Each structure stands twice: as C-alpha cells, then as structure tokens.
Length: 516
Image 1: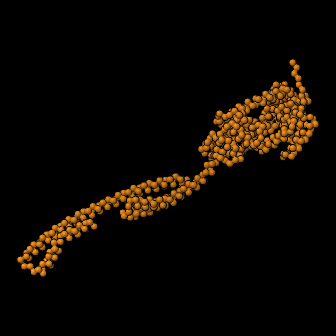
Image 2: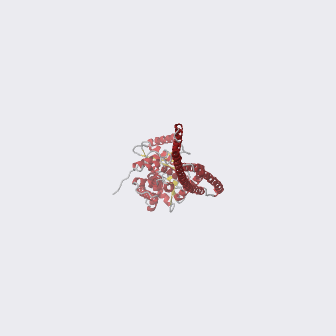
Image 3: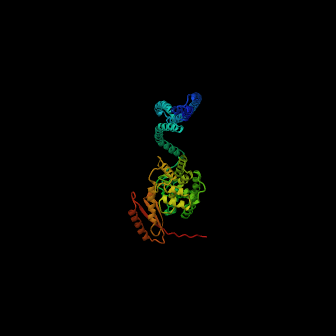
C-alpha cells in the first residue's frame, strides 16, 4: 500500500500546476484581459509538461524499485519454503527412525516361529501404511506453505502419534499374552531347579530300634534275676524292650526317638561291658544321656554351618541338634530342615528376596517341635523361643506364618511356606500321619502324669500300653489300683485310639547300702 501511496502523491504533485492553470484561465476569462498576456500563459503550460515528465520518470523508477523489492520478497519467501521443507525432511527422517525402531522391537517380541506369519503380514501392512503416510505427508507439505512452523510440526506429530498408538497397543497385548503363557513354565523351572539344589538323602524314621546280640545268652543277662535288670532298664530309659520278636536281636520301642537312641547306646555299652545290674544300668543311662546332649549340640552346629548360618544363639543350636533324633511323618527333621533350607535359599535368589531372612526362617520353622516340657503348638512354641533369643522380627514372622496360621506379611514368609511344602509333599518324603501318632502317645503320657503321686509315665507298644511309675512314699498298693482305673477312665473319655490301651501302674521300693 505504501508504494501506491507514493505514486499517487507524485502524480498529484505533477498535475497541480495544470489544475491551477485551468482555474486561472477560468477566472481570467470573464475579466477580458488584453491579448498581450497570452504568451505568458503558454510559458506556464510548458513548465507543467516538464514537471509531468519528471513525475513519469520518477514513477518508472519507483515501479522498477517496487519490482526489485517484490523479487526480493519472492526470493525470501522461497527460502522460507525451502527451510520449512528441509525441516520437514528432518522430521520425516526422525519419524522413519522411530518407525524402524518400533519395527525392530516388534520383531524381537515376536521372534518365535508361531508368530512368523503374523510378522510378515504386519510388515506388508506396515509398508502400505508407510506409502500412504508418505503420500499424506507430501500433501501436507504442500499445505504447510501457508502454515507456521509450529503448526506444521504439531499437525504431523499428531497424525503420526494416532497411527502408532494402535500399533503399540497391539504389541503390548501380544507381549502380555506371551508373558502369561511363559509365566507358568518359568515358575515350574524355578521350583524344579530349587528342588534339584535342595535334594538330600534321607532314611525314613520309625518308632523301633534294634540291637544285635552276639549270642542268645545275652538276653538272660539283660533280663536278670526275676526280671529286675529289664525292669530297671525300661524304667531308666522309658522304652519298651522286646526280647522275643526276633532271634539274635533286641527291639526297643518308643515314640520318643531321643529316648530310643539313649536306650540303644546304653544297652550296647552294657553288653560290651558285661556288668548288667540295676545300679550299673542307671549310671550308664545317665552318662549316655549326657553324651547324647553333646552329640545333638554338635549336630545343631553342623546343620547351621551346612546352610551358611553363623552366630546362632547356643540355645537354638542345642534345639536344632535335637532334630537328629526327631522325625516328622517318617522324615528325619535334620534331613527335612537341610533340604527345605536349600530350596528356600534357591528360591530367594531367583526372585530377589532377602536370602538371610529366608535362610533363618527355613532353619527355625519347626524348632517348636523339639521345645521340651512346654504347652502349645510347634508354631507357637517356635515363635516364643525365637523371641526369647531376640531374633529378627522378619524371621519370627516367617516361622509364625509357615502353616498359614497368620496372613503372610512378606515375600520371605511365602517362600518359607513354599519350601516347606515342597520338601514335605514331594513323592517319597513322608510315609504316614506321624504327627497325629506322636500327639496320641504324648496325650497318653500327659493324662498319666497329671495324677498326684505319679513320677514318670511312658507310652509303649505304639500306644497300646502306658506304663506309669509312682512314688512309693505317696501312693500305696491300694491307691495304685485305683490310679490305674482313673487313668483308664480318662483315656476312654478324652481320647480316640485304635484297639485297646493297657494301663500298668508300677510301685517299687528299693533299699541299698554300701559296704566299705
């Protein structure tokens, strides 16, 4: 507009004298001036034509200058278009790189043979879409000439994002389905690998031990005069001695494997020594009990070191050692604990859980089963003894929750539960409901010892007999008979058992003097 304004102004300036001249001639015509002034009027007309020519010349110069400016503006506009096209080419290159990256990722996720056909079809479809997109981009580039840089960039990115969103969603769904399919198989591989690392040799535990004899004459020495030696031995050890079952051996029967082991080693020592008499029997049994305590403590240390647990309190080591002579459903407790702990450690490493917590949780999960002379389930007793020894709360929780008595509070507790289930439930690990059997025998002894005057009570012959030893100073012969009837009645009312249970109440007095 400024260019046309300039031209208008110039033309107006060039015509001004003419218009003045015309006005002058119009005003002078009625005045009737003399003809002598006419030459002067012609001179003025000549001057106005020169000015007009000058104006025309200037106008041409201005037009030429305007054309130059228009050419420059056109060149500048072309440069801007080229710049925008260059930017669009860069954007197109970035988009192509992203597209190739996504194609590569899709190819990796679908590398299995069963997805080969799908990949080929998707690749063909993608190529067609890329060609279509290219055509669309070319059309958009033509339109971009009238757009700003930001508007063009925003429009292209928006269109490409819409196209990729459906493709990415399909890839995510495919990946999720693949993960679901592989998850079960991977879990099985982890469990099988953990079981392979944790497998240990074991021997099924029963309630009978045997002692081999050199000759049949040894049985007579064990029985003693009027059976006093065998009675003293059964009283001191709390086991049932069977001499008639098999020739050449003696069978020792008791549900308490520690008592049975003490009896077996004591009898072996007595047979080797040859001096079998009540006093010698009691001394040998007491000494053997102390030796067994040392053996169990060493076994506890060995178990802790086998699973990599150190700095364990002495009380806990001693209790773990009692696993050597304790079995669960016929499965030795040391073998079970060692196997379960190895499985738990392997699982913890696989899933990234706290290995030390799982290690101690597996090691102590059944420690309540060997806590002596306390009431409660093995889970409750185990939690109590761990709290008494100030173990970490995470370990205590793992022990408290390994039978789902409480809700799981951590992944470590779940792993302890899984490891225990694998070790106990795998084929061949256990052979019968040993836990209920032990509870029944323990209940027989508990009922018998609850009466006043009873010193000791032992369940024998797989629970078919309970032998009660009374204090002769507090219980007379008549009271012993009544005591047997009372114990029998309570067993009948409070327990469920197969067959019959014989209650034998023994009252014995003894007098001894030492000659010097």
